[in-house]
Amino acid sequence: MMELTGIGGFILLILDLWALISVIGSSVSTGKKVLWALLIILLPLLGFILWLILGPRANKQSV
Image (cartoon, rainbow, N blue to C red; front, side):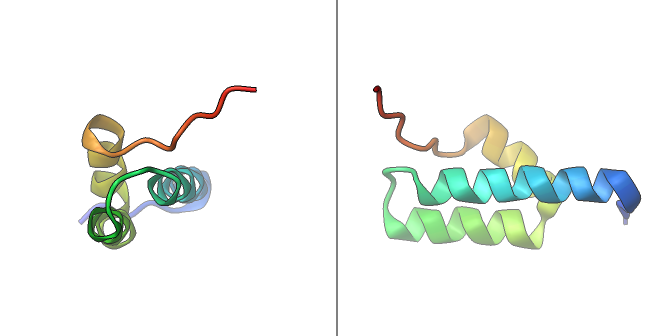
């Protein structure tokens, strides 16, 4: 199993937090939000990559 430590682990933590915030802010159903959040939390690197490719996006509001 690959272990990320130091600066790589910190960067992955920041990216995962960004992904979680985006999932929470998206307009998908609550069930899908929970599934995406669990995937990102339980499998940080793989979950982030899958979210980046397939995941829901936060709603963008224009100013």
